[in-house]
Image 1 (cartoon, rainbow, N blue to C red):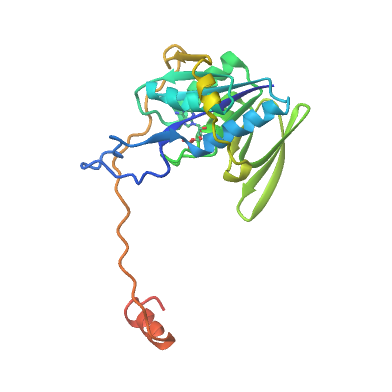
Image 2: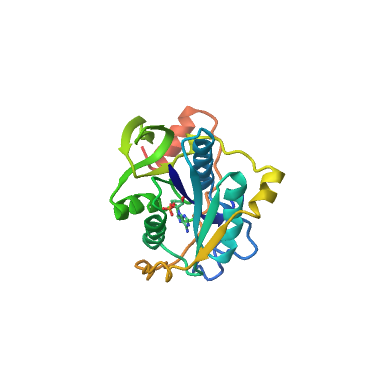
Length: 249
Ligand code: AMP
């Protein structure tokens, strides 16, 4: 079973992002970038399937600037076998990314496509669903458990108020939720080994993918600052304030 894992380069989750002074976008100057945490979970799951002898090859794919090679090298250090960068300096929206991934799938024919449930920069939660639609295949989103039996995948999905279990026929797209696994740390020898693993670079044009944007970003701003709270002496005072100041009861 060949597995393709989609890996996105995003602002590191520890960074407190700020808008550019003109509010046109998020300011990415001198900001630490990392592998999207949900993609790291997807890579870990693929590598575990390889270690169990279920997966034969794990291919990490990223769509983005040349620097995304750093995140692909991280995926290789975590255990992916080879990597593909679809190189573009344009900011792509989920549809264009899904089209690039579909083109790679057409060339590579993986049985399972593992993605993160969402990228923590745009919070789109769209790419996996769009990829499954473009491929015309099954999808199991928000996976917290994944098992492979023959040519079926069983995916336990985290949904509002509980768990929902689905069986998918292959090929299938699975998007990882937070509890799917706990990713390992890459060891130094594996980081060194990853430098020598195969990493192919191509462009959306090589894949004949139309990446023209359908959505334009109008602006970004920080949420309004919360006002400081006050302490009340007793319940009567609380009720009075809610009634006469906040006017919510
Ligand atoms: P999103 O739909 O943007 O929230 O992203 C969901 C998932 O799609 C991510 O966790 C990745 O697995 C994949 N993905 C999104 N953008 C990219 C990208 N530029 N390159 C590779 N994979 C991506």
